[in-house]
Structure formats: structure tokens, C-alpha cells
Amino acid sequence: MGSNVIVYGWKQSIPGRESLSGQHFQEFLQYLQQQKEQGAIESYEPVLLEPHSGDLHGFFLIKGEPSKLASLTGSPEWVQHQVRATLHMTGMSLMRGVGGPAVMERMGMWMSAIPR
Image (tube, rainbow, N blue to C red):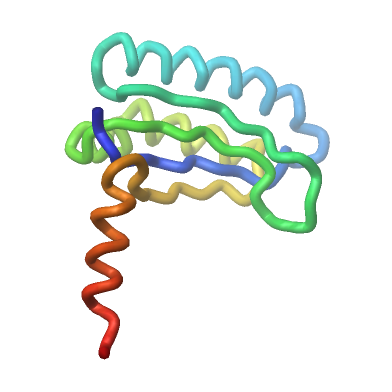
């Protein structure tokens, strides 16, 4: 199982474009399911955050191998979803990271880099 993740997040729908956001959300879920079935990603999970004062109100957590995630985010289909999202959402962001066993590996690297 890959320990690499993408967090594809957003702030909120642009007022008056909420129905576009809802429709695109469903289409993006279908797209991610297709990517999972084709082996391009290992898993995905949509997350909606409870109201708070921050700028991130929801995200998709997408897990997979580094090279496959890079291919995914460089594909024309992914870029098309990004372009569409900018027409009805604010605060779109794409962050890469690690999870699972890779967290302890990275923490070990960080700890070894601390000057003593």
C-alpha cells in the first residue's frame, strides 16, 4: 500500500453556483472511483469539515503510489476537473504528503536533522 497522499481541498462554493458545486462533486466522486478501479489510485475519501474559522472546509484524501499520483495530477482529465472547480469554488488547493508507515520514516529524518 502506498503511503503517499493528495489532499485536494476547497473553502466554499461561490454564492449562486452551489448547484454547480454539488453536480461537480458527484462527477468528481465518479472520476475517483474510475481511477481506483483502473489502479491509478489506491483509495479516496471525501471529507467535509464542521464549521470553523479556517479556510479549509472540505477535501478529498486520495492515496496511492507517488508516480501514479503524479501521473494522475498531470493528466488532462484531472486538470479539467481543476479548471471546472475554479468556476464554482473558492480556495481550491492541492497538497501532497505522506501517511501510514512513511510518517515515522519522515519523522526520523526530521529528528536526525535537528542540530544537537
